[in-house]
Image (cartoon, rainbow, N blue to C red; front, side, top):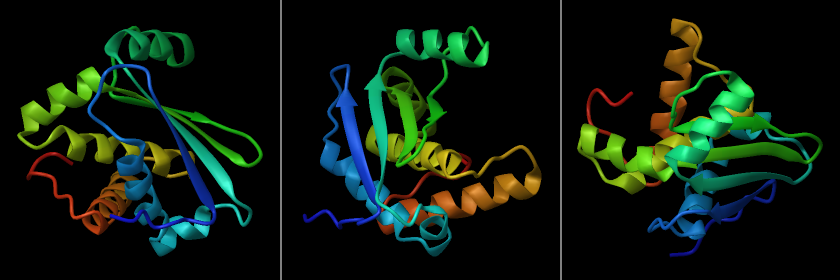
Length: 156
């Protein structure tokens, strides 16, 4: 399957743990996400990058404590970048697997959800209010739908 190119968004992927994930899968999901008009409108005019690190609970806990002051594991953290680099996402594969089992869907669907969610944060979306949350859910569902991924009821 050919990965659609997003001339304005390049995705770098690092697997720091053993996870059955290909960079191509993540690039495909985010290229399709970048094609949504609202998302495309927030991308810089010049080409930009996002770096995604697939890691484990230990590293996510350490990063969460160091940068957010929370001594707990989380699923995804986003770190704002500068210039042409939009930022970095750190995702715990351990948490991806647990959450996928909890919500009864494939781990790759959960990973795609977290990649889209983190990318939306890097582009300025948040979910602090009900209205913001509804908009993030709408965009997330649209992005996942472009990759033929559906989440079970109650996941978002």
